[in-house]
Length: 298
View 1: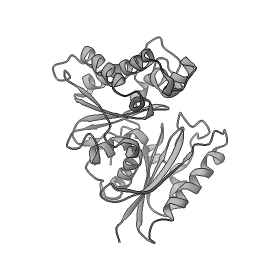
View 2: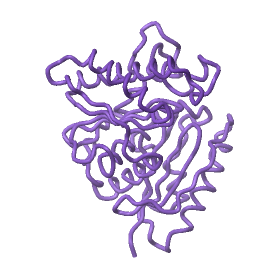
View 3: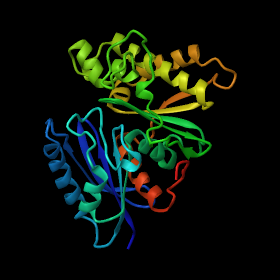
């Protein structure tokens, strides 16, 4: 019987789950909308049902571990989570809730850090030891791999590129700051400033969004000596080549250190399955030091 990881991805718009094997292949993937409520239990209820439904497709005893990707900030290992894009969850005990439901060891990590693991395992960063993975969607998140190790940080929150300042006098962010990349370039920000969903964005908005993402990537490349950023998320991938062209132009303008010249930004390689492959990677990493990328914090 092949061992399986129960993979769960929690976002501000939807929640998804799947079974992920040791090779990163997905089966029985499903999703539900994220409940719009101020009651944490109302948000939890459809996720609970989803996890139970997906887990029921696995042979008895096949699920060995559960990996969860969720927006942050959070305590290390996701003991509690306070996602900026899920207002009802403040210090919500996600790891214990999922572990009790799944009945297996469970690890929670930032969803963009999970993406970084997945992209290094099966995606656009395979074979690369130094890279940034980003999600530009409802919010903006990131995960960083240096010297083959996923950066965790003091509390497990390393990589929050969505809160790099790209417009010093910019909009107020949900984190309380001003001019964060998330406050300027996320799907939420685009909808708030234009009055239209990102799918209806003008060419001007697409180019501005790509430019701001490129500005943030250049700052990270200059700071951390890496030369690849892979980007996922409905906004970035939906905007397509004009977005990436604008980001590349801004990186070329801003990443001027000898070691950062030539920094690349590319679409993530896992497409729509990236968050769940990443969540699977979180689980397997927790289970036995993980596929492809070792931990710097464990």
